[in-house]
Length: 141
Image (tube, rainbow, N blue to C red; front, side, top):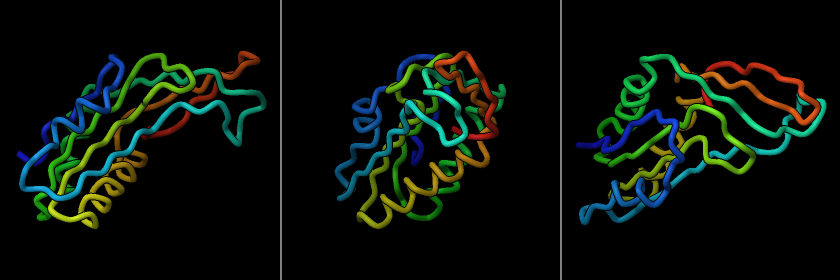
């Protein structure tokens, strides 16, 4: 199975669990990506204090399809999760782990997954600023 985890969850994301899921003696490279809530946004008038993510009911199936598409014929192994609910600054919103026979494949698959998430995953975020201002952001994480 090339996609060992594809989850949308309200629970905190665990990078170590994702790396363990892609561990495979056939693979010579592992790479990971962690997308965290940051304390600023170019469009924000004040500091960002939280993000509140919500997802379409089909988001998990979509996430799996995006990961499978990114893997393609590479033989890479993937574990990917996106968090929903209230996340504070520093919390992980997205975790991706990829193992592949070679580093180029691992990096390429990992990048393809995060780029697809940003434009295709039916997840929305509400940005909360220190002054109480909120703003909805489009698809993706």
